[in-house]
Length: 318
Image (cartoon, rainbow, N blue to C red):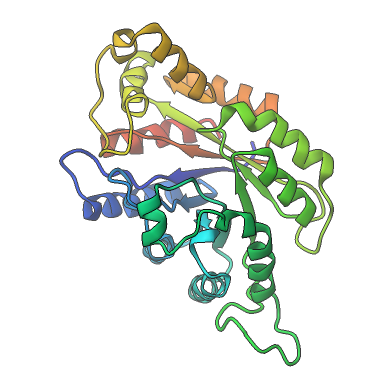
């Protein structure tokens, strides 16, 4: 079985708060470590009432300090929001504190509203500088050159593994050209996945970072004791928006108009929802069809105990 990891969206639930979400994040990471998951990645979202993961490096420090062996990473840092030097320093610090356990996934980010862009001191065209910013960040993470005027301390020479995260063929092209591992967000961008995979694998150029293409695909998985119970839990993800996560809604899909139902079915078509055997087969079929080197699992589940149990059931498959 290929490595299986977790992408934690640090969900804030209705009736909950960010402090509770962050405590549950650490608890789930510890649980994932005991179950044999490979990586535990955390997101970066801003001005989003349903997500506690705004300060990604801080949350990573919280998780890494509370675990021992599982790799902890950013899935990812939205580089246009940050100066490459500061990212190198932050992740160099994490790597110094937790040697051999830190990953750095980099993305362009989503199109924020103008007010959020302003609050982040962003300009609308900042994402166009993403390739240059990645190069600069890699420079700061490499061993310092003689006479180098600006150094990342800590950070230089740390060689923190860097991944390119994307939901498009453009990100795949960048990862291929730079010879970096590639993580594709299949859990929310299913339409672009096959083109992105073909682009990355077909155009990959070996580099000092990587000899051969390495692909991680995200996948939504909701597992429970029965298919019906899992479908009920999955209704939280189907109904999710920027508001705090809602409890499961019985017969939610049946209550939707046909057009909305079809849109959601397409959006979540790379999802595996069901009891143990359904999940085992669904994950195996996904791996056989798309041949990733790793998969990373997202699960928007309202109840924390049910989320823990979902990852327990999935772990029995690998």
